[in-house]
Length: 305
Image (tube, rainbow, N blue to C red):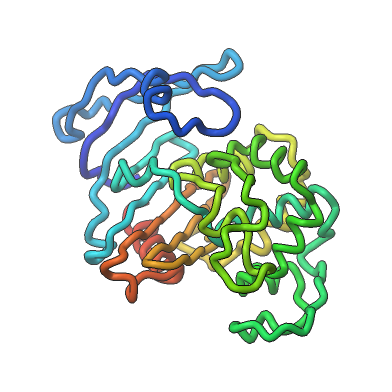
């Protein structure tokens, strides 16, 4: 990482497997603030001791200032460097607030489809029903790769229905995906057509930007039971472009009232740097989109890591 601007926060916490508990008092019970100091005052930045299956690792949270990249748009950023086990957080409070994943959930639904053999590869095709959708690219038979690139809701609605609630819930628990709440399976009716709704679209499922990064780290890390061939298929559809000396993978997500995401990772040699950008600016909603979040992410990744 380049020069860190801000504060390093040191926490002692116990990592508990499973979905998040939204009770803030219980969360506070699991972490004890030990020390807070500016990065300029202390070069020996300490971190969080995570106890998991008798292994101890130190995770450092650095509070940084990325405001210049957001250009007045309200939002937050999480960057996690796998090699140094370091988080860089801009807008820490918002980074830890659970919100709807929107279309970034297509990463998980694609993976669930591949793991359940509902999808075989990026060429797996779903048939178009003939309904006229507002996005022209959705009005035809689509492969997984095409559906992912165009963020086609009806395609992934079919995928999650074919996988089923039991296996979706199991997947969410395995990757510790936010609150894991799929109770509103059919969605909250955000869109007029049922096939354009789901629990991941401004409904029951919630996840914070920091949790997004942790879930991606689990999915593409080495300590999981996921099928390696399926992960390669997933990476293939997530690929965006070369960036610096590495490759950029990710997925955007856009909601109503000025909400948008871009999440993913850069892979360079044997190291991955994971990220999540979340925008939430009702007052400036015309400027907010998944593409804007992607633009901000690329600027940060190009200049700060």
